[in-house]
Image 1 (cartoon, helix red, strand yellow):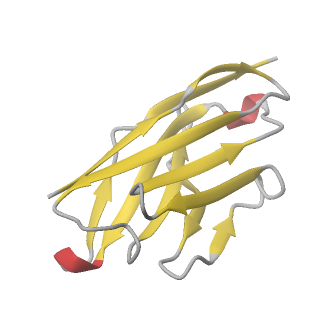
Image 2 (cartoon, helix red, strand yellow):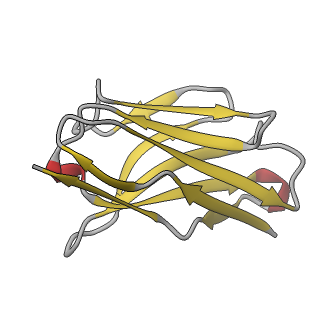
Length: 120
């Protein structure tokens, strides 16, 4: 099995920054070959994709976060990151890490989530 553990959430004022981390562990050698991403779910809303990064390093962002968020991963540390700048109250949500594990039949794995709250 593969486990994903997010960290780095918290309370921040509008305009501030946070960096989320997602540490992968378990039956894996490296996240190098995994496509990974960040999703978020605000209260009363559906979960939405924020950003994804392919195994080759290509990235994609939701329009609402383009130019403010940056996704990256450190294969040596088996960790995915999301740098969030110029945060807005609309960014308030639980942020989830996601991974597609090719070595386990393209198993989709989710973390437990980390709460980001942006105040005015």
